[in-house]
Amino acid sequence: MSVIYVLLTISICVAIVFFIAFLLSVRAGQYDDAYTPSVRMLFEDEVTPQSSDEVAKSNPKI
Image (cartoon, rainbow, N blue to C red; front, side, top):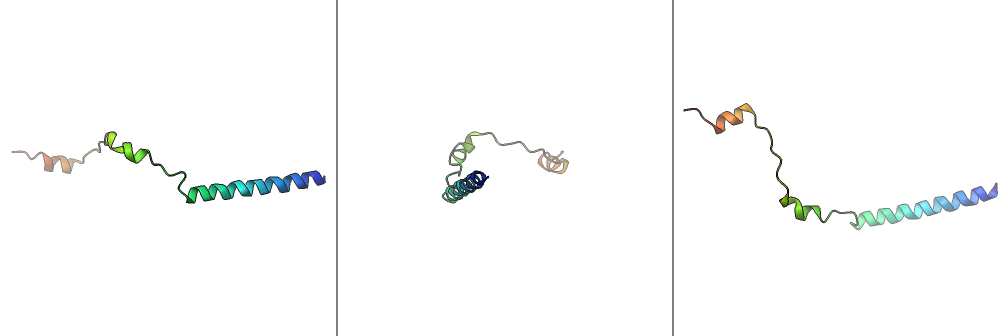
């Protein structure tokens, strides 16, 4: 039974170490996306539907 307590304690300590390492890497910017902003201009813009008022203003009837 005492082996379970030792293994549980060790596993919690290892989990805490990995969690601290994760937090430090997030604060250091390890997971920041540096690739997408450089290729964003290559993607086509999404077409937004116009309302009927905007269509009427852009196409006046003579």
